[in-house]
Length: 365
Ligand SMILES: Nc1ncnc2c1ncn2[C@@H]1O[C@H](COP(=O)(O)OP(=O)(O)OP(=O)(O)O)[C@@H](O)[C@H]1O
Image (cartoon, rainbow, N blue to C red):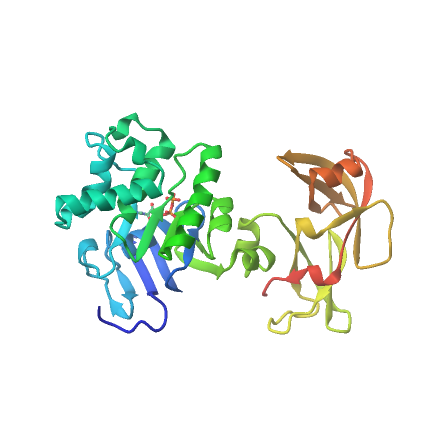
């Protein structure tokens, strides 16, 4: 093994990929630590799959560098890479048994038959598919096939596992179960996982850090909580959902606070120290929908906005209440079903939306 083991395991440095006139990846840089679970997320066409394919060695970058333990690997074929990067998807061999599928990569590596079988059995047991070892993969359910694909990838004992939309073919119930199985495997094995997904819930439930991409660029990298609670820009604030974006004019309000006035009303929030927001300029205040409370009357504390209930949307045990302010701005509030049951609401009701000043933050100008 060459290269130093200090610093990130994998470095993506100003990576770019063009197909003719199409820019699939414009300029992407980030590092991955050994043992991390990273999710690449973004809207369709943002370049996440292309980024993963370049890490896997299935596509050659047009610009920039990929370094594994400090060594450039741009031109290395997948099988030449010091750490085998495993592409995990659904493509199993339908004419081979489960065991033969799991053994496949080991056979290619020239492992003796007895050792292949032993290793394959170990992984099949670990993933709960040993009982189907001799069955054809076409006789398995979606979830069982997914486990075969995982066992086949993990039998190679890779340093890094690359997963491309690993759960998208499963039904919602199974998806949630496999999601926690992937998290458990990751924790037990200590292998680095890099997963591409378009699903917020998947990325935020599984990953240590999420990389949010748009138009071939990274918009934000951070722990799920960090991204939810403090979006770096408008794209992320809108993409992750669950946020209110209030636009208006800024005015100083003393004591490190900035006031914003707009169609939504008036609110105060901490004046950002690191961002140049001009008084009298246009600013956008972000307030998470689950941080806003509802009341029947003003209390005189924090930010309070008068509004009318427009509609309520029920999803599982969570409710989104859509409100309209006197100035015609939309405001959304997220509550649990239980909270709503305690104070029933109907369209047309007049309410006060309130939140503490330090729950809001301004987007960079
Ligand atoms: N082989 C190719 N030839 C030409 N254009 C390509 C090729 N592969 C990808 N692209 C283009 O590059 C852009 C990024 O594609 P990519 O597959 O990386 O996006 P993505 O974020 O994974 O999207 P999705 O979630 O839809 O899979 C898209 O505009 C796509 O059409």
